[in-house]
Image (cartoon, rainbow, N blue to C red; front, top):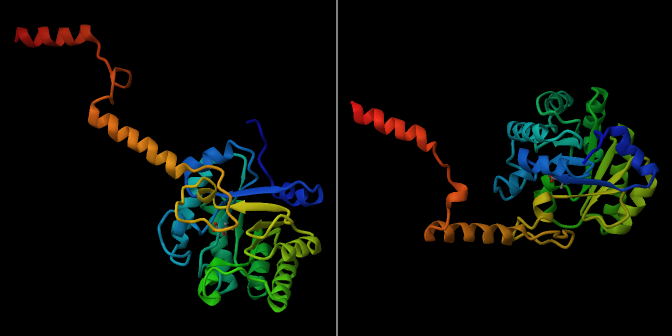
Length: 284
Ligand code: KIV
């Protein structure tokens, strides 16, 4: 596909032109390269990596070094989509200096164009500091997975008036602090629509209904690779875990029966030169 690199102003401009922003996660070179061949606007190297690829029960254990290594792998496969690196738990909470230094690594070492941080009012100072250092920031509010223990599980947020007000306030503060976009996760559709209407920056929803300026999903969920994970907000566009098992089953059968490898998948030799080798061996 012939397309130009997606820029940050182009993402922000989509809100005004009312064209939806599309975003997906990727954690490795191969899938990032496939995504980049589509028309996807944003590739997020999400800290969901911890659960999806590394098998942890939540996102908390993934480290800065792991996030940087995976962002580098994604960058090697991407020419056009805009890459956002997800700042992992405890990589930005301690001080403005820590937040700026770690955010900088995503751009300098990872090849990302922007970083994403979880939290609203309580981290707005960090967002301001990172943006002032010249690093674009995407916010992330609502059901923020790094706060899973505070929430007591992965529960939809903003269902009551008090919570809804707080999330709206979080969104406003992130905009004021200079975020270029904000992810709204796990909140009621009406609240997401209300926030989308009151912000100048785009909102990108996940489990936040249809009124956001864009949508993001975890690629493995969309492809049906994650066989046990079927929350209401995920739509499976493929069921690759079944296809993979079928393909591997066929492979096992063919290896056992001797049908693979056949002549088509085996190397021939240069008969002439082998004969020469035989002859010369015989002469000795
Ligand atoms: O880590 C992640 O994958 C995310 C999103 C899906 C928003 O934060």
